[in-house]
Structures are given as structure tokens and as C-alpha cells.
Amino acid sequence: MIRCLASVLILLLPGALAAQSAAEVDLAKAALRALQAQSIKGNREYCGLIGRDRFGGLIASEAARGNRARCRYPDPPSDTVVVATFHTHGAFLRNYDNEVPSVLDVMSEMLNGTHGYVSTPGGRFWFVDGRRGTIRLICGPKCLPWDPRYVEGVTGPIASKYTLDDLKQRQFQR
Image (cartoon, rainbow, N blue to C red; front, side, top):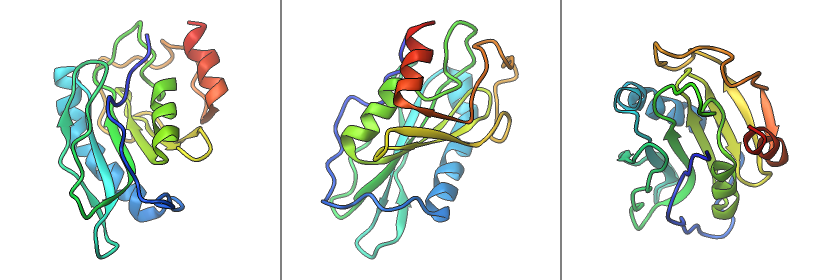
């Protein structure tokens, strides 16, 4: 099963995707940390946007509540240029590979030209590079709030970085 990320496209101004910054990472991590317990308890995805306001400052949107497999991003304010997304992966499920971003998560970021940040039931924090189609682990298990039912290793070994092809192999051969 693939975890769907978004059902809408996010329109960006040309050249909106800049290099990942420490401020962007910190903002995404804080947003996901605040959503983890609620996401795990209800086994629902929560998602939001990170953008640059008209003054160039980074802002995070309010989070939208999704269902178990997808989340529709909120509309950004009209004067905001979206640069990244963030979303949770809900609760721990033994037969569901939600400790890594999904193929669709990566493809959505590539299509929209955004960065993406994903938190997992085991407390991992991932970065999705929408320009390159790669993902890398920012911090490992339990660096964010985690589901107490989480069992390390149930979905197999987890690498610290993946390409889109790596994820396809991992998720479509399960």
C-alpha cells in the first residue's frame, strides 16, 4: 500500500525552491513535533505548508487533518510562495511501510518543485528533495514523539537515504 500525500497541486512562482536552510528544517521539525501525538492517537495524517511571506520570512501554515492515507494541503495565503510541505504518517501499523516517505510523497514534491518533510510513527524525521527526487534522514528513531507501539525493524532495515528508484524497489516488492 502506498501512502498518498496530496490530492492538490501547489502552484509556485518560478525559481521558488531555494536551498534547504537550517531555519526551514527547524520550522518543519517544530510543526511536526506539535502534530505527532495527535496524528498517532487518531491514526491520521496531518499536513501543512512552509512558505515565504511578502517580506521573505518563513512561515508555516495551520495543519490540515487528513485520513489514514492522505491529506489535502491547506490553501496558502495569496502573498505566500510555497517552498516546502510537511506531513505526518499516523500510527504504527505492523504491515504498513510508513517509516519512510512513500514513492508518491517523493513524486508529489518533484511535481510541485517543493521540499518535503515527513515524520513517522517511530519518530523519524525525513527530508524529501523535490528537485533531485531523493530523501534523507535528518534524525532517526525517537528524535520526534513516537508511537509507543512502534517496533523497530518490523518493515525491514531502513537506510539513511534513498533515491526514488530505491523507494520503488522497497515499496513495490513488499
